[in-house]
Image (cartoon, helix red, strand yellow):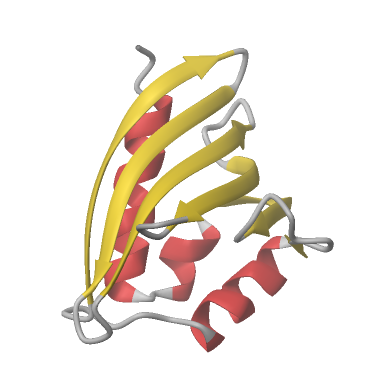
Length: 119
């Protein structure tokens, strides 16, 4: 499988840990979009808005654990399977991420499906 998805995933997890605006910005194209659900009517659009949204909703290190692996990559689209646990809240989620990539490896579109047990 192409290394594009794993490299982006590694960058995403690093940005999640650091909440560093430059690391977040490096993940998305200028006109990239971020949707926390496929049902989200208006994804966050534009890298500046994604960074601002991320920092308003940030998770701090120690609040979560995350395991993930790329499961598919074709025609510039990557699929990532993950598992997130929010330690303090006791919430856990099975994740499926669909990421559309620009030629430079940044995301033009990110959509997350997050399912809790019993969903």
